[in-house]
Each structure stands twice: as C-alpha cells, then as structure tokens.
Image 1: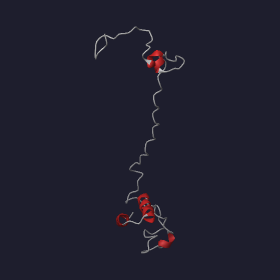
Image 2 (image 1 turned 30 degrees about the horizontal axis):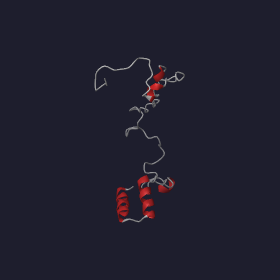
Image 3 (image 1 turned 90 degrees about the vertical axis):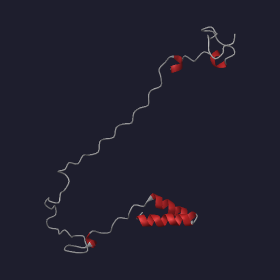
Image 4 (image 1 turned 180 degrees about the horizontal axis):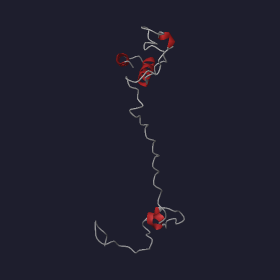
Length: 129
C-alpha cells in the first residue's frame, strides 16, 4: 500500500533503495562531517573586542578659572585685533577636507551637466559642504 500523507513508513532498515539515488550510496565515512557522525563544523569566531574609549576625568579638562598655561602670551595672540601677533603668526590654514558627496556631484557635473545636479551643488554650498 502506498504511503500517503501520514501513517507507517515502509522499508527495511539498513537496506539500500534502488529507486533513490541519494540513498543508494553509502556516505563516505572517511570524511569527518556531521553526516558521517563526525565533528560538526566549527562555530564562527567572535570578533575581538575593541578597547574601551579613554575616559577623561573632570580634573583633566581645562576650566576658565584655571591659571593660564601661556602667561607671557596675550589672549588675542593670533587674532588680527588686540595685543600680540596677528594671523600671520598662525600660518596658513590647512585645506578643509573635501566632502565625498560634493566630489561625486562635481564629477557627475563634469560627465553630464544637469540642472538638478547644479541645484544639489548650490544646496551643498549653502550648507557649507
């Protein structure tokens, strides 16, 4: 009697099945796999923990009431107003890091000028990017 959705299974334990190619061959017992009763695959290794961020104590942060660390230098040193040297003593400012979004938009504008891209660039200018 053919087996339906449920009921008793027909077959003989340990006997090969000629109509099933996947069950006709014996598993390769030389391989150490879960199918042959061997070791299971190793679990993936956990990522190493990152060191914790350094903790800055309240005593390490300068306060407005702390004594100056440069007593011989006026507060306005480096500014173009007041006592001390002007902006020439500071030297040139390093270039601002380029925004990758802006770089991509400018490259697209070179390839294919587009009014929508121009509006995006104008918006980035407005945002200071």
